[in-house]
Length: 243
View 1 (cartoon, rainbow, N blue to C red):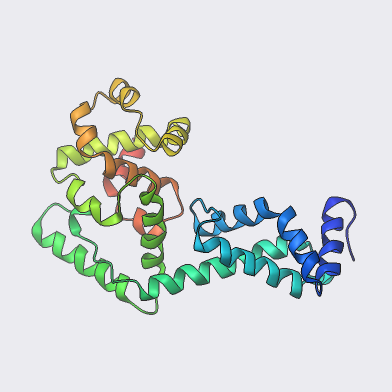
View 2: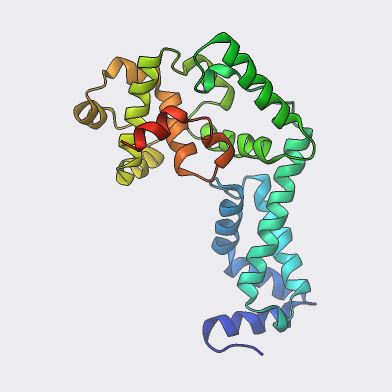
């Protein structure tokens, strides 16, 4: 049964447009922002009409119109589901054929060469495991986020803190950011750290912040996003958040 109100109206429009190309195009025009929003949510990064994901989302929306029936519930909910599935399928297909990502141990929370090796082996094994692409997917998705700041996942190996004291200072900064969501919003909008506020509130030297800027941004994005596999390796930050 079709529900009343605005949702009911789009349900009816979708049913009537199923076999009419012009009507489908009208719906696409009216719901462009909705399609972009769904695509961005599925990709976990901002999607514009110049991105390949936009074409994938358009095709998915058309697919949703052509296969929709009232017994599937709200059309918009159904369309969002189809778009999400198609975007995720697309991302997985790209990551499957992308060059293998080797995670350097200096990115993580190790202290000795021996521990470095064990972590590197563990990560490399999980990333390359065909039956579990969850870590590879997270790396691919977070790399898309990092690109907005002008660096890549592999850049972190060069700017990650090595000394225990430096790691703890970086963890203190990340914890400060996480405990102040408004600063995270500012970081994402301006694509940079609010250095003056961080120095004032954490007493961490500005020079250290500038040297490890990429690492701090990456850690904030990982710890506040949906990246459970990567977050496991942020031990120092988790310990700092417990204080």
